[in-house]
Length: 135
Image (cartoon, rainbow, N blue to C red; front, side, top):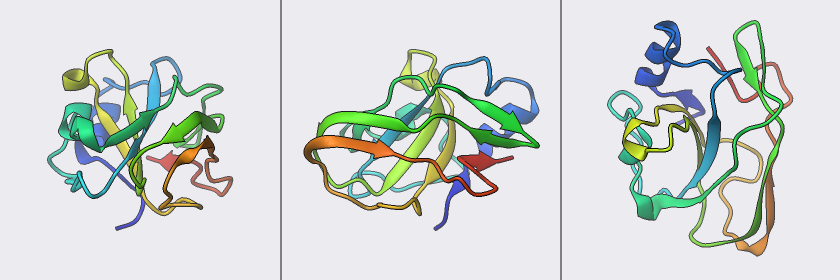
């Protein structure tokens, strides 16, 4: 698999239910041993089992949108420990896992997979033309 958008997340952008610049989005680090992606049918954060969620970022900051390309400031996870991380999932945070739409699943970022060792880990978004993701 390569970095992709969740089908239902893409639909929510097209219908105006998701607004990258004005809503809260977060990045959750995911253990592939406990989560099998289903980009067509998975819709909400609750589709990723709690045990597969290694760590969750604060709200993404400094978000930009240019020509359908989403970007934000890099995110850091302080004193991160836990299971091996193979994916970074981007979702809109509503405060409730069952209503927080999944947007993108990243699995080819530099440094993935990695096993947290109690240090600070920074996820540096791609500086190429597609940044975090492109609609």
